[in-house]
Image (cartoon, rainbow, N blue to C red; front, side, top):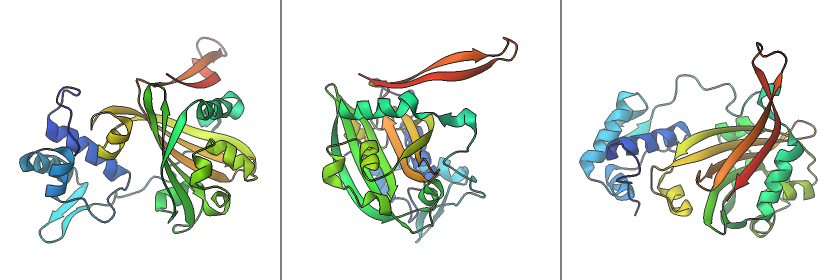
Amino acid sequence: MASMPSNNLPLPKYHQIYLVLREQLQEGRFADGLPGELALMRQFAVARVTVRRALELLEGEGMISREPGRGTRPVPPAAAHANDAGGEGESSRAHLTGLLENLVSMGLRTSVKVLDVDTVTASRAVAGALNIAVGDAVQKAVRVRSTKEGPLSHITTYVPADIARQFGRRELARKPILVLLEESGVKVGRAHQTISAKLADAVVARHLDVSVGSALLAVRRLIYDDQERPVQWLHGLYRPDRYEYEMQLSRVGSIDAKVWVSKELSAQFH
């Protein structure tokens, strides 16, 4: 049973639940409908009135529809983003020299637990990121990576099935996925990465040993091969007390230009 943090966040419990559910709705987690009130009460260990207040906030924002006999369902957004995975601009590219080598090094210096590996059909978001058709087969793998201090990250990766047939649960438990891609014949070209913040839901909180609603670093990374084909889409949630992302910036041009470029990228954990 998940428990809501009482002191970690200076927010009422219903607002914490609202924030968690809002993030999950934005990710498309409830295509078949939200859990019922009783299920949400058990998940967050709160009273019905608390769950109802959270749902009322979501309904007021137009994110859900609540109808007697039909349950609670998400309301599709009026317009989807053209490409949730990011654009092609140089300013948004994470060059591979250093960054991916560092990620492989991290994989070799941490332990991993494979929670699930399965071949699934690509959702609209996954298909858009990997430049494949909705419904195409992809490998979905969910892993938790840990250091000697404890769990570090909860990672979900999507790889086109024609590439992922070369590796499965056993290989994912033994080697970083970038190494497995290379061994499968993929020549990694570049990566596009975004970093933001998210709140831990009940599932992730249990695996990372944090409270539901705790703040996590959220990383989305799209890996391309040298022919510009997307070969892996990663969603990573990291404990901020055990992971930090560092960039060294150098000024370009005169001071009036105020233009900075990244000179070095690294991902560090402790």
